[in-house]
Picture 1 (cartoon, rainbow, N blue to C red):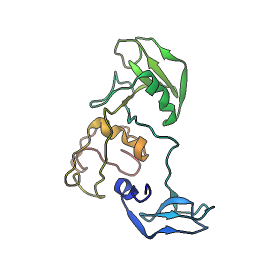
Picture 2: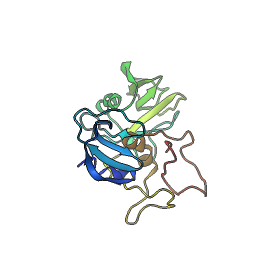
Picture 3: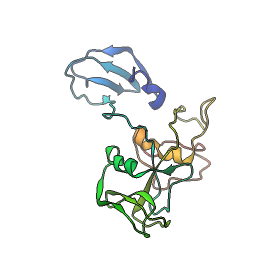
Length: 200
């Protein structure tokens, strides 16, 4: 069921037949040439051009949003995470917890931030940004995403554009990274949130 739902999020279509049994393809949910299939072979094998689609162990109800390097706080539309949610960020992002993890400094962003490959939680109430420190935040509620067709200039019918914060949260859901200049203004690109190759 999960594999059948992937074209909605990643584009493409279901292979016909959808359920296959190929010893020379990866086991489970795979994609090639824009088509998804489910390989029932008990072992499976690596195969050039066949991409396995997987899920993390356990589920997170936190839709993390990565802020800008040096920013004072969360981007528009996002809210601060608490200490427990900040600790859980290492389940989804590369890095480790700082030692100490909880700090109280006026020279760093308030709340959860990432610096020198470590996560910290700053209890200080002063709002300060520092180059090399990136705030980590969250969306206020979960979102059901809809993906337009490649080359479209707008969102699908009966959908709304994502906010900046919602767009920043997409790498966690769909992979890829944020463009170094995340907010741009280019008349040749679609308005709002879009992906080009692996960049958002």
